[in-house]
Length: 309
Image 1 (spheres, rainbow, N blue to C red):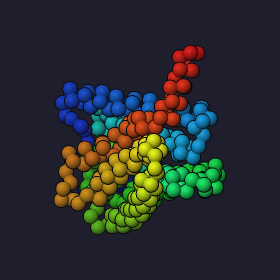
Image 2: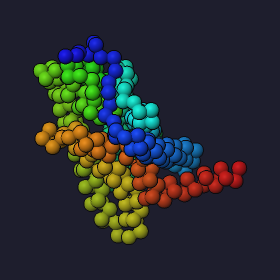
Image 3: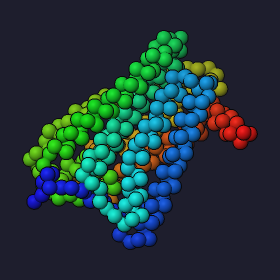
Image 4: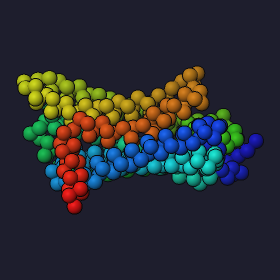
């Protein structure tokens, strides 16, 4: 029997045992990571440099790109390094830092997606009040609230999780330090408080989910009343990317944290964790750029300017 005071490192789940598959995992994750860095970095730079995009919607998208970069940089580089060097270890303090940062970025992103749905609701359903309800100060306050909520959520979860005595070894059945997997290492009678905290956070997340759904019901009702097809197409081009990002993010993360233990398995947990922690940060720039003509034009202008220089 071991406890948390005697644990100096954790063992992360390896994607494969053979050297060839480990290298395949490294190159696959490297490609996804570089795509996420390039896409999110391009969106961030374009929005920051193009004054035509200094609007609430793109301000939130800029924050989303930063959060995506942070979340994928917290988990993927360590997993790539372990595969490259045929290693599974992560230090105790490194696991704490990884848990805190990942929960911080993911929680802040979820709050930000909620505010982005409100932005689209006001822009489409209450356009005359858009400047009043979503001025620059209001947008900064909302972004600060998202980052602050993410920080508090990460602080509570990390403090609760790593204050528990760990008596089930130090092998984490995941490629990064994920809270549900760490809780499996704790004594069976001592993790009730953290499970209760997860339930409270799940209720708050469900409230945000209901808010997003209600917002989009109102948005689609308003869009369908637009008499011109071109107007509907333009409106959908700004709403559908956000809806796609929200759907992918919520469905995979909810399944990962709320699925019944009866269907849980290491391979399924691994696949689901990749779907909600690795795929969205890489796909978000592609989803937004393909459906948003204004953003595509801005990226083209910036690339042409760089080439001409």
